[in-house]
Length: 95
Image 1 (spheres, rainbow, N blue to C red):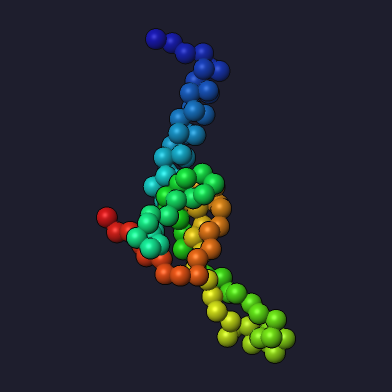
Image 2: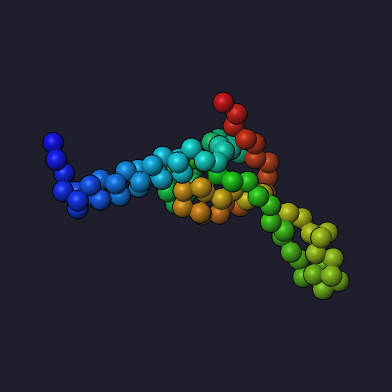
């Protein structure tokens, strides 16, 4: 079986795209809030990166005391990048 140069390039590109999709699906961690697994509201993916964000207030910012503000937990979807904000407790799902 022989393939043209164009067909080989198309197959290579398709293979690279599939490999990238498979890689993205396995990166990140799964989390739950209130015993419910968190899914991205944009793309329905279940793998996220955990982070924190400060919830600044005018008073503490005016006094240059931003570090005293409360923080929220954020989960960043590893597929589409949508950021989910949580003020309550979230826990990692361990296999």
